[in-house]
Image 1 (cartoon, helix red, strand yellow):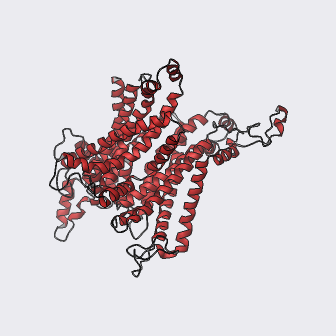
Image 2 (cartoon, rainbow over the protein chains, first blue to last red):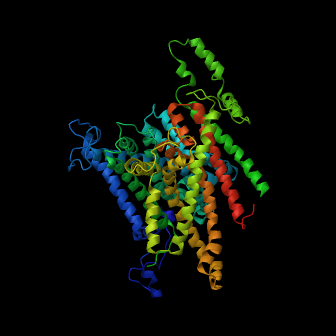
Length: 313
Length: 320
């Protein structure tokens, strides 16, 4: 990421140096150091990062120590069993440990969110960089393709793909791919905008003057500089992907039992509205926590990555 | 303005074709064939071959697409235009048109409710920036925006329909009360609240940001300096400009209302287009699925067009 380093002498001096002659002694901060400082000052953003870390850790750790607990039925146990340290949320109607099932569902959600966003960022970057770099008629045509994809009823299309193909291929893979191929347009537009700006910038001109090939200029020089908005869009995209998966599974088309998903846990809990009113809250609140963590982190990254945001020392 | 509108309409044509091709391809490429349900031991293979010829399934893909596409856009639509539903044999056109009023009722009501609440809330937040009220509302907005619609719908159902028994659990009318307006209003409350909470949370944030932006401008300071009352400055001078981005947002949210409504309609068994779509996908009723997808795509295009046109109407600084 060397190309994005901006040297800002005089800012944020550790000793509060105001004397002009001492400027040379002041430590120089790179762009990424400034980003980190701006991010760490934003309490909501740090909260989002911590929350997301806790969620990711739980989604890896608890299914690991729980083993098969997330799908093992035990007919000697039921919803009336007292809660215990091994089953903090009790057992469901089949005697499955709700807590471990919830964590497995969270794992499913986060895996889908992560890989869907990876596809979104990948397609978006490739499409947007070519469109922005080549320009002209190619750019025009590629942006019309973006218009078409943007005009498709996204959720409905994902629903169709998952329902029609999900029975043949693993539904998890279909959900990831479906969210990926319908959701890349925003990322593509952001990358294209960055490329239009960067195309005429000095360091790209310099690389071109030195005889670098187009692909080298794009991949080595321009893509790293255009990554900031994609990172923000991807972080915010996790929230969308997780909610989309939950909605699909809730409607009965996505991940189906016995596989665990926050969405199909909600569907199951719906039948116990009277007797177990809390059951719809466990997956629902977990879902909200994921969405909040991703959007706090995404908004915080957007503010931190913006070089126009000044950091008063 | 008129020429701009016409130009935008012409620009929409390739998008319509693009949507048609993609929708058609998805349905075409799904595993299985429409004649599969006839494949029983009682139907001879020759019969199946005849059906394939009858439906034109033996023709090359571009010709199949062209047949479907020209029929789909043959205005005025006759029974044949959108085909017949696989599940009950009724013309797809009738099934769709029957559901449109319910969807429009639900979407329209929640749109109006959202606007009525979101705009005053946003103004209040902007005028009293950083007050305890602003902070409290911002917290609620953040949570409301993060709440998945289907979960919110479930919670509302559990609380108001199951526990308190104040409101009906699902449907548009109670049994035997078809077309009864007070009964329908009771049925509307929960789905409208579900949809409105999320859009109020989103829109009031925009309204707050937009109002803050306007309140910083010079002409507002001038109005204040002239000695106008603060209500007049905010209500007459600032509000008009602050509403411009909101009007655009309105057009852009119309299409997303369809998918939001699809989930909410399913949760509350509201007999609208979205629920029909979700049901048809489950029943693999391809003609209905195709028609719903196309209408969804049309709504996106119309929404974008509406947003641009409204933008030009409300903001005199914009000329096309």
